[in-house]
Length: 216
Image (cartoon, rainbow, N blue to C red; front, side, top):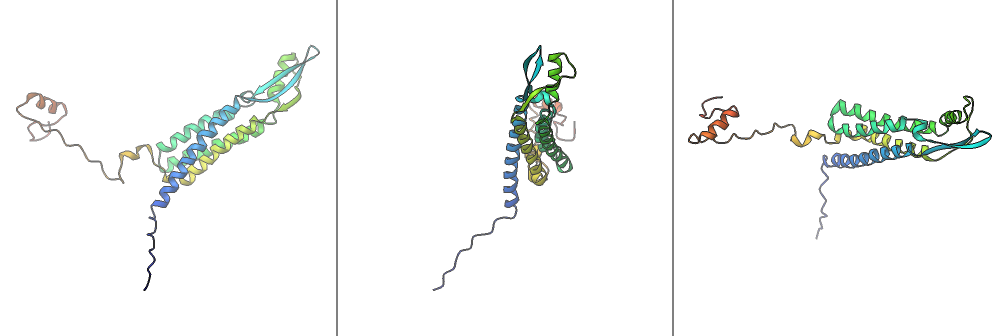
């Protein structure tokens, strides 16, 4: 007796890109939103601290991320806007917005890493506190928040790269109004009862001919 092994039907070729599109879309949304939140949060935190000599004593100084550089916060907002705009455009427009999203993330990473060792913000505060324009901050230390901002930028960059790679598989905002490019069916005009004057007036208001002989 021969035994025939049942072979499962092959997966549809269209199902694989669809699954890739859904997974990449979910990952891009999560990375973009999380990255922007982390970058914005990090810019509100203390990035560096030090002391300035004022009246013979040490005066403590601190600088937040927004004092050091405003680039990460600005690009995080741009990245969020680009992440939303990806679904409002198609083809070349989607490619351009995806590129902007990736560049926003790269810019955040560069600005955050540069600001991690920057002391100009504290030097300015030291000059104001001491009244000496040539004064500089002493005992300078930095926190880990600039690197947290860089991680947020890296997540936005990843979202942009995913959009560049898989964006063509993602739906657009107007997709639910279309069905494979087929024209939408027009609703049938309501039947006008010639014995009811109100129906005839409503038909005239819609620009229809209540007699059915031609356009109103």
